[in-house]
Length: 399
Ligand SMILES: [Fe+2]
Image (cartoon, rainbow, N blue to C red; front, side):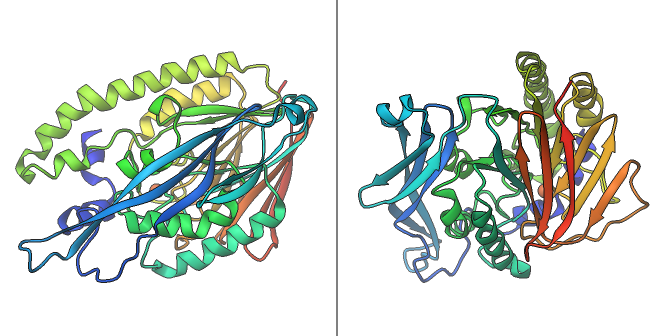
């Protein structure tokens, strides 16, 4: 585990050496909007959470009052617990509209009360919004959002790496700017990737039940589980120390924070799977892939393979959605579909190494997964950003 920490995410280490400190230097124009949102968060059968953020003030800092060249925005994060009008709720209507004065408006669908209701949702990941628009990632993600809106999903799941740098507000501003036309109307469920880890803005912007980075929700015939494969964030603490002390710090961090975190998450996963074993479909999502298509290691692979996979098999989950390796990959093993969907904007990676065992399909195209589930089966369409099909397949409900 220690080696993995030290090898972890070269880009993140490069950032450690840069004077990024939330917002880097030489910003002379105001790039921070006065309002971010509104956008729809955790949604159930009788409520939804609407989130937005209002700019309170900015703080400028530098080495002297003559060189205040770093700007940090301070947002006040707000939320509204939205309940449907009682008459429409009793009449079985799922649609609610909302308008927040001076902020914005939207229309959303609540989760169905019955598991017999057919539903539609989408999964994608690694848009990696970055204020520099690196490799044209913004245009690709904007195109994806625009096509996705036409497909009318009831909720979406992002398999992680929502932004390039989780501590940089400029990246979050870009992320919400592109995503807003979808996010104001459609619940957006995030999976934690290694580029946001447990950064403060992530937890400020999104609702995590009990402030836990792993959670689950129900939507008609579907039980959806979101896990945190990245673990806990140690970068901020580590950067305070000289490099010679990193090894000792990380050993201690691993024993006292990381391992207890994964033990707790495993115990929660066991209990969550047990409690929802009657659902027709169980889907699981976490960032790091189960079947690695690249010749590079990632952290916590042993936990995924040794602790989680046996549980997925034991409970016959329907499919697992991962991100991180920027392309599309579909493997099928023991009746479980393992999907890497990491083509929502960031530059595509060419595969390295030999073909992965149990492979069904592989594509180096930007894409998203669109799923339509009835109580009996669930049809998946993997679509390029020009609406062309990469593949489609249908799975049957769990036995
Ligand atoms: Fe990643």
